[in-house]
Image (cartoon, rainbow, N blue to C red):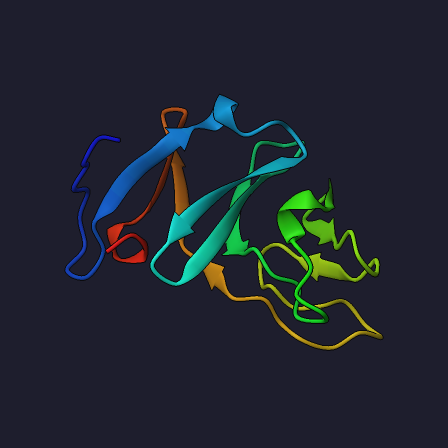
Length: 115
């Protein structure tokens, strides 16, 4: 893990993995101070970070099916929007989201998640 200070007054970005470490339309989990965070990679190589917990019954979203910009929870098929963390209607609830960047094939998160 390389420390990569990039800018901003409040965020320090650190490399957590390479893009290819996350399978297309798949996920990887990291342990953070706030709990487990799932890093999702879409078919178009967008990466999103959400708490690894469905707002319905706490199912592991990282084991769900990634499609377009959503993930379907493996327990009860709730669909969670990867950009907002909001469950798609008619379901209600929200998974927490976290800032993530991809630069030069590296996936970066805010260091505060790991402090």
